[in-house]
Image (cartoon, rainbow, N blue to C red):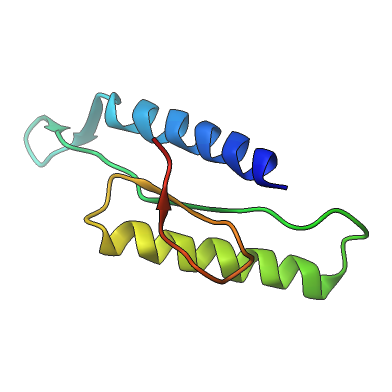
Length: 94
């Protein structure tokens, strides 16, 4: 359902925004080092309602993976959705 995909896209955008706001510090050789510019690329897909079969799960994961790579190809730090279970990837969530 497109409303499920839109809701999932909004949740993914909230995660992406939260990651961008993180203040990350890692142990350096002499002292802690602050890491700036942490971003996330996220691919989102949903499945049709009905029983969850291994094949349906595989199709959904494949679609999410395609959407993830579309987000990376768009420059990263973005969310992309796959509205058709593996077809027509590239709709950006506003």
